[in-house]
Length: 402
Image 1 (cartoon, one colour):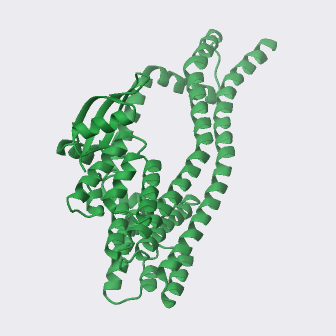
Image 2 (spheres, helix red, strand yellow):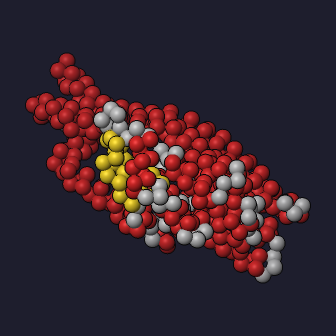
């Protein structure tokens, strides 16, 4: 059924925009009247709109989770893919999501597979989602597969939210402390320097260093800010280069304290996606292809390629996993047990659950230590500035008394 983008006015005079499915523009206007909306403009969703969706069809992680969960429920209830997409589009929270769904529905109506249709909006449905959906279509269990995919996306979203919520307080504390230090260097220290100059006394080393830093910020602060911004842009572009990204990813796994946590979360993502794909009917090689990008680390991607090569040569999956030296030993042992019991997807799911729990515990402990550490470090910096101010004052008082 064709889709139409409309602009209408409700009973309170408020303008509303959206997309509606109808046989013709007249039917679309009739449907809008039934919704107590007066249509101002009704335009068919053309190929141009689909192209725009291909370029900018981005949706939030939360919207993606809700959308995949909704599709899984609709597909498991027996609705065809086209009708499930139409129903999801009707209940979409934003016009952007509606455009994405209608673009996908158009491709499916023309005979395309759902996974291929999702490629129309790659920013809304990344390769991981499309790989899982493709495996579900091949196995004929699309409803069950989308349910697993929704569960995985929900877990990932919840874990990301926990980490972000835990980082809010340290981030706010750091920004406020940095702002206070900069304000002291720009406004407080210069006023005190004027007083010190009146007495022409020898200042302590720490005071001279703070005064020098303050004068540098006053005279070259703008250029320093511009230089830091340019450096940040250059670094952001540099880390996109495969060689630099691979080196950084390798280093991130060896950093004390943080490295083991990073390895745990990457291995957990790899195991979760592999279990989802292989449990959906994908072969080991297909599951490896989908999981290699889920870890978010090129070292794990390279390890997935090594595993695939060994499996093609006839080696066992567990031994190939162990030979990379990247994955945690516990995960290797669990996969070895699953391979012996012919239940690799089940054991990979258990490994992912264990690794996720280990990451949550470790990250909570690390973040609980991060807050007092930030307070101590920033308090020390503020204390140094205060000390650099108080030492000359005490020195002058001593001279005055003497």
